Image 1 (cartoon, rainbow, N blue to C red):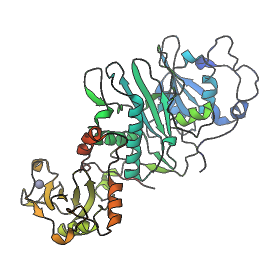
Image 2 (tube, helix red, strand yellow; image 1 turned 90 degrees about the horizontal axis):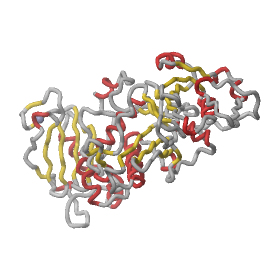
Image 3 (cartoon, rainbow, N blue to C red; image 1 turned 45 degrees about the vertical axis):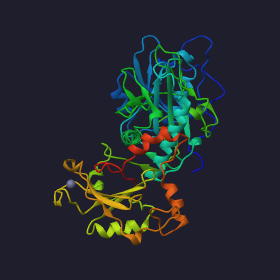
Image 4 (tube, rainbow, N blue to C red; image 1 turned 30 degrees about the vertical axis):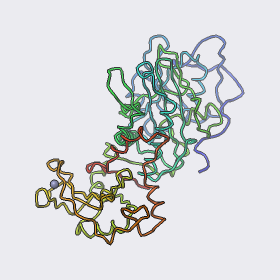
Length: 444
Ligand SMILES: [Zn+2]
């Protein structure tokens, strides 16, 4: 797949003035013309509705995108089903200040990964929004790689800006090279997971209008049939339109139309055959409950000899996953299939246990996911001496792979994303292993 973008000439050479309907702008000086090449296609009808339900019923099973637009007179919302190229053709003929247009991110539609980032600039005078976005994009790319194995770069991220003097506001749309999300519920689960992981990353936190501290990522935009503002559009009674950000690095769109198509969350033409990413327990993942009981993701720690030791230790259970925390030189092993907990002296019925290996002190202990055992920690036991090898700095453990193990360890590190040690300290501390009741999986 070279490019997910349809490329071509969508604009004809003129012709009769079309009926613009409710969406049109009758302003003098605007001479609309139809785009013949696509208007001849039966899929390129556009139809206006006053009720969203009618719109969604109409677009079901059709290659049409559901749009919303606000009347320039009173802000009332109307709905339109259209091929997005046709929509763009007419929308661009409206006066910029009258373009109050949105995409309906319809429930269960495959979609891109998208974010709404914002904060009140007056309440957060010390915040550099551009730097925050750059750091946040790095964090998201880290988790895309870690969880789905999906690699992307800043040039895959469409960065739209609607900042005013009072409010920093961005939309980010990730055009992953070979993957889309199942739907925006799955996107929302992933985003909330990432936000939970970095909730202590102080630099990305802002004060909201109610005086609360929050991340600057709005996690409310993944709801059912969400309206998401379009490129070049303003909110009713506002003047700031969504434009390409000065620091946008997305480089796959060669025209305004292509930017528009790329910015549409549910427009995935050209993504046929892509992986469909799922995350967490979403209404669209009916089988997830069954899947989540199986170990679906295992990652060896940088210390294979300790992994083997733990594997033997927990028989007949096994390691569900391991997480290495470089700042504490600690590995946490989540165990399934063996729930024996030293706190209760028996197997738990439903909650799993974990082992924590502190390499700096060469000891390990058992801890537990049962809420009643949340404060429990077994006595420290010595990590067997044969697993502990001088690693050159006079202390601790090294992998069998010698130098290679140091390299693999550095790859396991939560990257700094350009933050200082003190700025990232909280994130390290919050980067605990995944909650036991929150599994993820992906399928090809
Ligand atoms: Zn327990």
